[in-house]
Length: 330
Image (cartoon, rainbow, N blue to C red):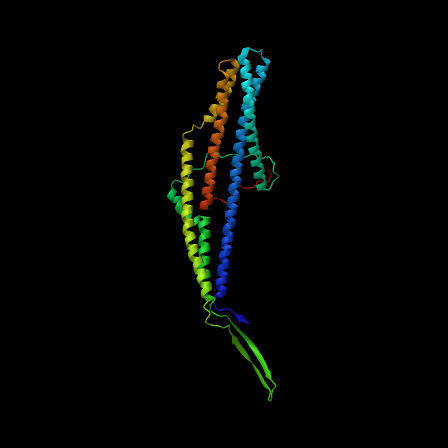
């Protein structure tokens, strides 16, 4: 029966435990990344739908004006010019409408596939009324990340594993031994029968396993260096995200909350006033174009802010595992 030198099995188990812990952290990180991806896709789909609805409204107004001008008696060159400009503008709007509709369809398909449902399953997403507040202090976020960041936790696990492998390399130099019974019978001349126990161990006993020990020490030094580099990279990434979100907050705070509603009212008013002849076609088109452009830019700003929030939560390990819950029905 072979017996390992005391401590070898314990070290192997400790190294295996580190691998299990690394796998568990990796699984949690994957689930968090998946939850964040689904949440961001849901936001993108909801905002893309709102953008598409705005484009549909502008197109409907322009088509209604073209139909109205076609029914009216031709009143000189101006009416002909207005009709031509509107029809040409409708072509540009149709391209925009197609792009927005395609973005919504693609986003919905990816979202449903990640949720395990058919790609075109209808979905209604309720967006939060306001963006979540940014943590008050960057320093506090950085301190929190030192203990909760999955990246740093995995680096710590790798460091512990490398330290254990150095110990295991040194202990490998200690020989294992075997204990067992033996029996021998010598029939040359007088019978010589022997029964006893034996202890054996491998030779040469002077093998100190220096090569493996040196390799494991080099791996430990490399792991220590990568851990420090990971900490610096994490700090830099968190700082960039935090500062970017601060700039977005400043941009959002300078925008009136009722701006989109006001532009929608102006676009509707411009439609009525052009029909009455109070404004020219250029003003009508500019108001409609501004409504669509501002809607898309404001929605993109909100989406960027949500994306930064999710990236920050993923890096710091503060994303809730219950971020999204799968409902019973779509």
